[in-house]
Amino acid sequence: MAKELEKAERVCKAVGAPELWGAVVTMSDAVSAYVAELQRVRETARSVGLTDEQWSELLLGTDGVGNYVA
Image 1: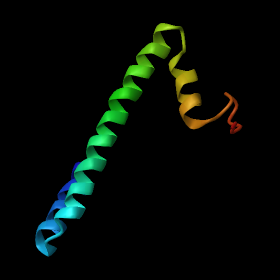
Image 2 (image 1 turned 180 degrees about the horizontal axis):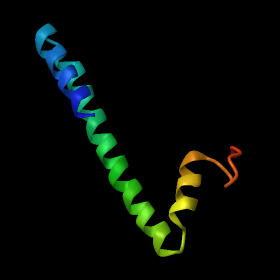
Image 3 (image 1 turned 45 degrees about the vertical axis):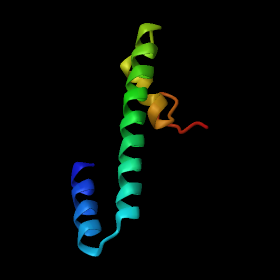
Image 4 (image 1 turned 90 degrees about the horizontal axis):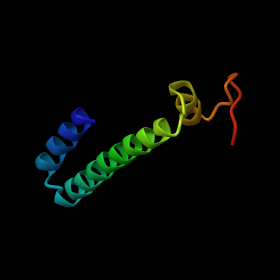
C-alpha cells in the first residue's frame, strides 16, 4: 500500500492533480479504518471461540473442505 501511495503522490505532483491526490488520501484513510475494524472484529470473534482456521475460512468464503459458500 505504501508503494502505491508513493507512486500516486509522484504522479499527482508531476501532473498537478490535487483532486486525484485528495482521492488517494481518502482511499488510504478508508483502508486504514477497514483494517483496524477488521482487527477489532477478529478479536471479538476470537473472544467468542472462533478458531484461526474458522476465521480464515470465513475470510476466504470456504466451508472447511475448500468449497466456496455464499
